[in-house]
Length: 432
Ligand code: URA
Image 1 (cartoon, rainbow, N blue to C red):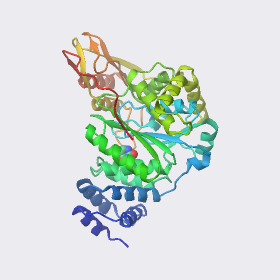
Image 2 (cartoon, rainbow, N blue to C red; image 1 turned 135 degrees about the horizontal axis):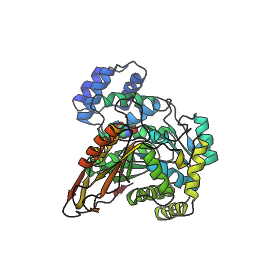
Image 3 (cartoon, helix red, strand yellow; image 1 turned 180 degrees about the vertical axis):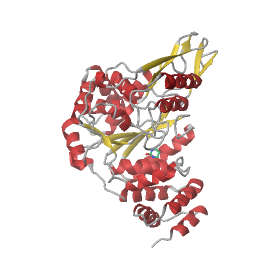
Image 4 (cartoon, rainbow, N blue to C red; image 1 turned 90 degrees about the vertical axis):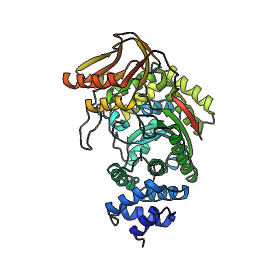
């Protein structure tokens, strides 16, 4: 039997712990045998001293062992692909990528999470669709993947229960932003969720957990290594989160943008990320295509309408109404205008994310209700020229007072300069 205080002390002193010790600690914590205060101290020791690659794998393995696992490949008799983002502002990528990949004939099964802080979660966005059921049983999930080729559901409580508890503890003990802990948290869920190949989107910038490209690369490499050890193919895209992704931030607004993108009329940065991610997923699937061929197929699925059809089949299969008119609309729309002429030099993702959060698009506390109709549309983005009085953004609000406050916050997120500045691409690097 391990003694948690000893493990905390050894980690505090920078020693490497054994796989069996980490396993007992994590399983003991999940069974309520190790109290929160000892686990919190352990997490803080890890935060300062780090984990070796062997320890990170052992932690991931222990977290997986805390619950059930699914083998989608065996259940479907073919390869299943999945994608995951580390969380950003305006990130509706899965909602567009899933239908594109499914339209190309590859099963896309995903368990998603809810929003965290200023970042939106895929499930919260899908909740904006009247009737959509996020909670399917594992049997329903597999059956829908077999019949429709696409399912996005909430994380099952039986899968990696250790992460649920550890994440909540990290959230309140300032131990979220540690590369080993993030890598173990994400990859334990991806591996237990059963996909054979995974495309990871590591967000980098002021609106992301990873603020610098170097940190983003270190996280990507840690997750690729965990995937390799678990026999899963993993490709990591490092993508820009210094400004919001696409134009829309807020649940129903983002769904409309995902739909426009499936029809070929999405914003350039978001469309690029969707097509590139889909290309990588198809290249990792059993279609026997490379990334360029995969991307070409993804482009065809958008051009010939099969991606939108896949979206409609998927939403109906999960009980939802796929029509755009069914999505809620906010009663108040306020324009944010440019106070002078210039170029958009910066558009802070975190500030737009916080404005959307204050409007009610996200949760201020775990229990808070989300307003699915509200949010922000950033019509002008970095590198755009504007004249004085041009509309920079729209704020979609529940009432005048919250709209006015958010309009002020969104205006403060914009920095106008005398020249265009150097444009940063949406995809900063690809590893794996
Ligand atoms: N997303 C996760 O699922 N876990 C983390 O630790 C951070 C982001």
